[in-house]
Length: 412
Ligand SMILES: *Cc1c(COP(=O)(O)O)cnc(C)c1O
Image (cartoon, rainbow, N blue to C red):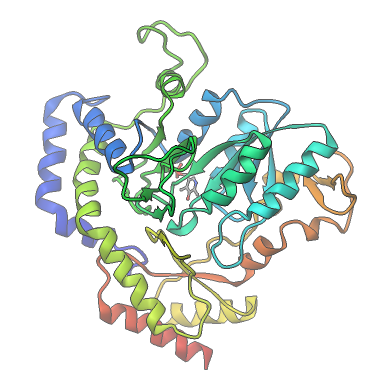
């Protein structure tokens, strides 16, 4: 059994895919060919934002957003402790400091109450300026943007939506308001992932909800000024033309061939894959009744980058994973370590926050032994208990039943 069956997807899309890729190869326009611009327009329209700028990968997409905002030394960027490394890796690359925030047990996404606590700690410490919160749409579920936005507005934070796993998810906004607080005419109220942040990003890594056949990424925003800056930063900080360089940037473009692949995949994604993967997830939830299956809050729809079950303990989780493996079923631990325990961030030890109890991550001074363990307890505990099951739009009912039966057997 495949964890995410990309070969099966190719078999289904083969005819159309081969034609699109061969056309791109025959065209000769390998960098920034017409497929790139066409894809950007299709993505912007699908998501419901003004600008989409594709780039080389989802990590660069985050970097481009931070660069457009001028984030640098002395800035605090709040990042959930339970996510892929990239969400925080980009912060020290710009010279700023990540401050880790705990997540919610049931939805795996950033806890707005703990975000407020972390911002207050940073303010009372007085060393860093709170600038940005990275909200991650983890495993396909959009974060709680109404709660995040209310904290962000109070403290003047920019919201960076890391939608690498979230593309395709939606939130039914009860009051149908836009980011500026105004009612948007003609909106059904169903807002799509990658439209929730002041800037949002996604990744087209093959295993993401919308993947290409290599690396790729995109940045989304309604803001003209930021879009223009990102267009410059992604091509060596170009000015009026390619050999006029007005800022230090990156070489971060999406290949024409990958844009051609994504045009075919986006069509399948929008027409049936997103519905199909939601049906697979619903079937899992039905068959795994009684277990701590993923919680999708009312009004939310996930794009199911992962289907992640929480077990009672590390021992139980590890036993289930081993039993599945013995039956030829791949199941993965996303993520085995909270970010604050990653060696790359551990070099900058914790210190006590303004209230004398909580801990602020990372200034390289004031190691308080014993307190580190209290940082982000929910994220730390989830890392011991989560297990992600095989999931993709082309998964058959029989395969789902095989996985569920193997889990039941392991738990007996
Ligand atoms: C995959 C991922 C990224 C990075 O995307 P790449 O295209 O691999 O650089 C960033 N954030 C999250 C949450 C991811 O899952």
